Image 1: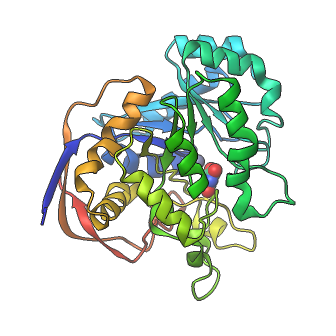
Image 2: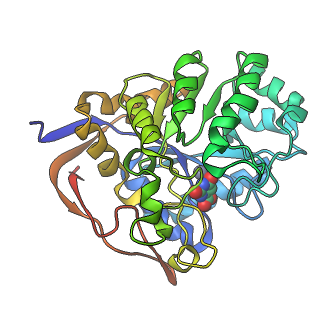
Length: 345
Ligand code: DOR
Ligand code: ZN
């Protein structure tokens, strides 16, 4: 049995670092495990300009513990008023690594998102031309559509035509949750990829109602039935370069989760690698972990691999019930559980 695994330093290709006190509390968890991270722009107000992205990047760097080697990669929040020229300039200047498309009202702080992606043809053409990735929250927002079907229908109605009409556009379908999304990405060419979160590998929708309503299992896209979890797992451990690590770590203070109308988001940053590795171990795919965590994403984004390594050991790691964050606290993913791997160096 493998007792120790050393891999090239990994990256997190999708994370919410927040701002202010929450940023100060959570950024160290991401920076401890990952060399780089794609930082989501869904602040209030959202990060839509080069100036806002530069200022946010500075706040992130200022919040890092001294001496931390961590690079935040910034994203541009697309609105109906997105300006192709500003986007291209920000990419050219190295401020932005990608654009993020939230369909309006799909999730947290997406009210200013895009109402009709096809109306953004100038932006889409620009992204395709300059090779800048488009990161997509892939859910339809029609409230008549069953929430468990919103991703699969998005793939069919929006993503498939988008890929057909912009064949060289680099697209990351973020936090995939369904067999349909995994199959679409598997069959699409090298310019379409997907990130996968730990929670969508560990949980099926029973977890939302296990002995009572479980707000800490609630995120968007919502976790799906078992057959989808198994399909997403198979994609993650397949070795396909189209699938890579993106935690979607999304902290909300405990009171905002344990509420009559609880926020969507799971805070998984503190034990992200341990959580993913448990899955690769269960699937007898430890040899595929480095590709998923440290190589596929960098290659897709056209970035160099990280220098240095991180080592995990087969050892019990107890996850605390709560992690302090300013004057609040956040319940981490796997709270109160014991994971079988631990980062040691
Ligand atoms: O669960 C989620 N939380 N999904 C998202 O898409 C956004 C995120 C957040 O920002 O809290
Ligand atoms: Zn997210």
